[in-house]
Image (cartoon, rainbow, N blue to C red; front, top):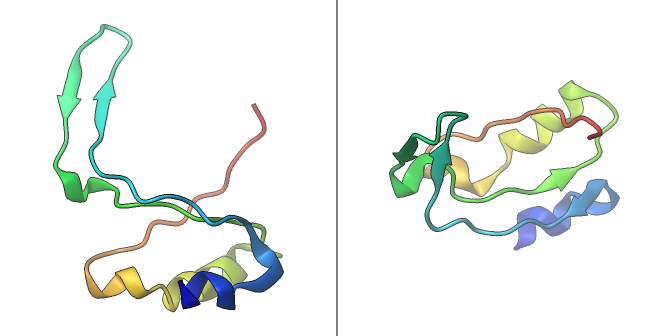
Length: 75
């Protein structure tokens, strides 16, 4: 995808498309979500949140909905 290639060295993981998702809580209750809740992901290492928001503003998937941006933490 040209958008990912345009992100250059900031890309850590090109990501994957996601077809179906489910959630489970600590009680074992499940939530069958709609397909559109999350369509895929890409992992980048920008200098700061403003930089990643700039990357997100050019994401082609914005034509279909929204793009969520989040920081990760070491586990």
